[in-house]
Image 1 (spheres, one colour):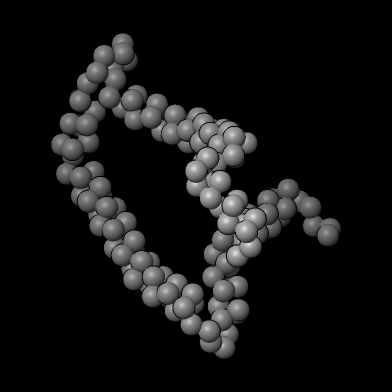
Image 2 (image 1 turned 90 degrees about the horizontal axis):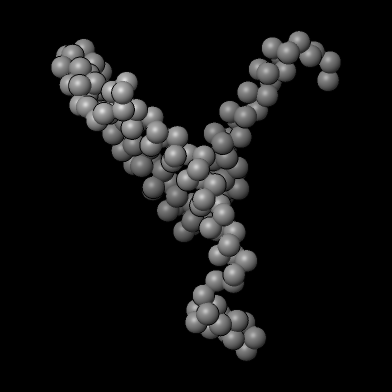
Length: 137
């Protein structure tokens, strides 16, 4: 490394992030809290309040007292846990292999891994286009 790069790395370690970066991160975090976390907290809070605003566990008792809902909740939790474990079991070894070894077809594998992220917006765009009646390219 050149002396300038070392000096820059030491400066970043000692002084911390640049003010613009810290401000950007703070703004992004604030936006995510406002858009994602705040609505979720409001929905959960409504589930524990009566119509006049008092705290109650009656709704929770209603849900947990119904065997059909409890069975569905347990099944959904089991499916979520098993799906996570299977995805982790498949993806972790593949990620290690793809990052540590050089093999024929590695570029193809890397591009195929992006398909699940690219495909849903593409299908949504095609569906929206078909629903709007726009058939011309």
